[in-house]
Length: 222
Ligand SMILES: [Zn+2]
Image (cartoon, rainbow, N blue to C red):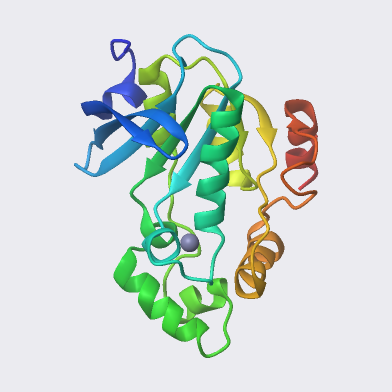
């Protein structure tokens, strides 16, 4: 692991690491703590130090979807697909960020769920409660990539905020579309992210990657 060189890197510190055998092969799991003491997790598969165009997923924690199998979102499917795609590729990184409910926390997320159960979409539910649409930051994830010595990534995402953040950190090689097949309720959530939060929707996981130049023109057009 590299020595911290700038503020972004010193804002996060490495805590512990161990190999974890999983159904998707062996992964090196590490914990990091940010300046606020929040613990984030990183999982790497294969050798990623000094590597270019590493397959990568920034994934925000979703207890309801990933642990309890909530049908309301696509988080579990996206995480599972990221493990699978990286295992197939032979190397990659998953940064698992402690920002439940797009950053509003589990308690507020349940309040918003309750509003959604009365027919609101995720954006209107948050707004009805006076909560922001999306509070997430990807600075810690970029800092972790820097600490790992990853040179650039192919980011598996449909989220333009993630792409912008990784591009500004100088770490974006290209985007890999990351839409997964999900049930009707989660499909409504995916459509809300597309229609109201600008998420990209040009294809399923087998669509061709959107290259950086196309992404840049897409951003300047918006
Ligand atoms: Zn979720």
